[in-house]
Amino acid sequence: VLKVLLDKGFFFVSQNGSHAKYRCHHNPALTVIIPLHGKEIRYGTFRSILRQAKLTEDDFK
Image 1 (cartoon, rainbow, N blue to C red):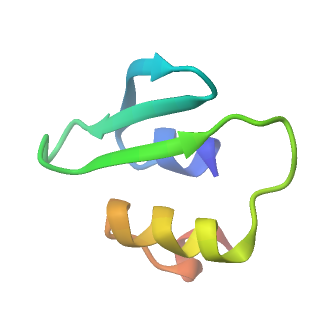
Image 2 (image 1 turned 60 degrees about the vertical axis):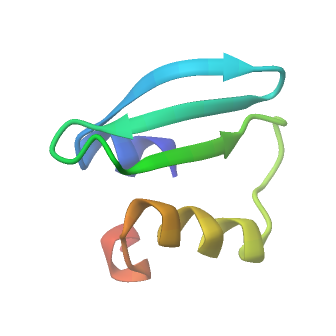
């Protein structure tokens, strides 16, 4: 997930505990919170990240 976000123009802003905040270069209003728990992201969390980033599942294929 993180690699695709970075490829789409997102950059690291800050980290609070085990969650990192990324913002888009092209549209600073787009902010995404990524959990860094060291395990696989659940599907619902993945979909939430997609909505926050205005991406689709096709962007990950």
